[in-house]
Length: 301
Length: 301
Image (cartoon, rainbow over all chains, first blue to last red):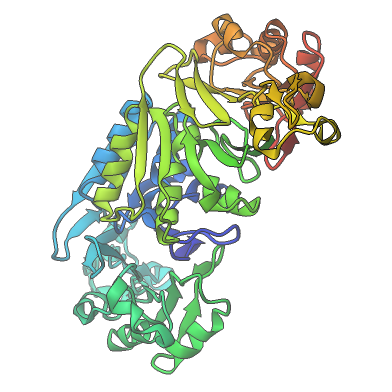
């Protein structure tokens, strides 16, 4: 898995920071998560090809998380895209984008497939043979979801020396990878675990922005390898957090600690703070493995 | 008058160019003309204060001319703007922006005043005591207007030596500036032109983008000091111009020549061209005073 942070600052625009957008590379997918204004330029800057993106996940309909999407859709049209584009977003975005395309008389030649989200319970919204994506209902000023990206359990790995020694026909390799015991060429039963090893532990990533402190999400994200959790504020402005339905670095760290995640990445910083290291220091008092998101930063895990 | 080019390239986004947006400073106004994605960041970059902008003119509803507006409106809200914002745009933009604000539950505290344009004839859309703005109906794939910004004739200038010598009471100065003859302190009629001089010639600027070659606009823009006319293509791609309803540099120059404008500024270049100087060379064969727009360039006239 590779997480490309295209933008990780809160709404007020500056010449040197970008609103929320990320690309998660996972099992050959390039999932775009949120799409603030300027995301298409950030994709260009970080050399992520537009046609690699087939699925877009929008957390909520505040502008700093979605105003860049219609421009990206329009550019994909100019680039004569043919592949479908799936958009998972709160109900309403389809209406806006359809209206904008109608007014511009610029319908896409490719298919826009909107998956409109309305549930306040976590739900499975994407699945293929290797990956699942679930919503994480959050607590913000408008209807908002985080997203949980989970690899499925992979196939067992063949120990080729053991397989050859056991004299197993190649026709049974597929069954071995699926965990079955098989017969060898001399009719002997070969126990699966003697010739295979366990698959790599499936990885998982949880994206939680924007949200007030919400302990309800802990069961959903327990044990994820990486949690991105917003930390708009520091504790010195803790009184603003519930009012604006955002979190502090301390609160993000408390969630990370309760959910026993592998790593916490902080982001969605208010532009009032010049020194981001204070976010890490504040969070470190409650959780050890903390990293700071920054525009253009890439995390591999 | 001062014209700040914030972006002057056609739709396909790049990391080093911007879609159309300009700020025209004229008689204490800061008129924003078109507002492609990223305009708010370009305003920051070029240190133009958001609260100086009270009037926005949108030529048409293609994304590279208007997708930045909702973000700018949202940021003005975050900055606790109180002044009205007037938006002159084709019918439809009000509906889009209202829907976006509704979905984000983010109504502005200041007043958004939409002036929806539908006429296919030139019309006066803004007027105060010093400036008038007219639409220039253009020929593009969707309903499109250029804009003509005209200073009104100013007041005559007092020749203070002559005024004092003529023994005119200060109470008559206003009348003198308005061009009237007046009585002096000894009851003598003083001819206006003996104590005043003509006002400076009012300046004018015409913005014409996007459009196919359209000779009909010539009477509307005849004699303007500066004409910005799109030149998406060079003559080598002349066959694309009528198809996409854009112009070539040659066509822009022919319009400038027929309208006897003072200066022609070219812009809205297709991103297929690396060397912009060819646009100037091509136009110069038909019109002498040609300049090339570029992002961040400022024209004073």
